[in-house]
Length: 184
Image 1 (tube, helix red, strand yellow):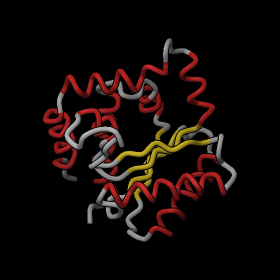
Image 2: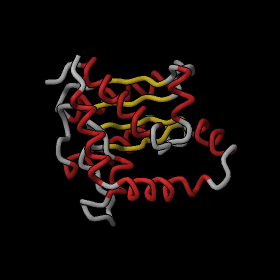
Image 3: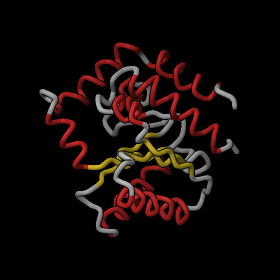
């Protein structure tokens, strides 16, 4: 079982080298600089514990506005992407059930992430591939504020796919592998 500090270090490295490094999220650099990203590791494999941890994080963001966003990392659960997608649906339902729909949204990442209409070897899948299954809780108001300053924000996913395909699966997989090579 990877230690919490190592999982966080590996995930931070991924955020810096992939998400910020290739500008997959044009808003992430600012939050790294501000130190406003919270990393929460959930070591449990039990769905109930994973959902409870998400509820705690929704409440944390509500109580601590200086925390811009949270990455909830599940290093032991959902190792297969096919097992992760039903959990994403449960996490979305929990968000709604707790009354946070419209206030927060989730972005999902997984080491085996595959878009529904993409082949498994499509480099575009790497825009959502991460060292561990991870749910990113994002403040909707922050997204609206951030995209207000960007021309054509709807083009961000298209641009990311183009960048990923230009880099290729091998390059992107090597970067992910290097995240796991980090040792504490």
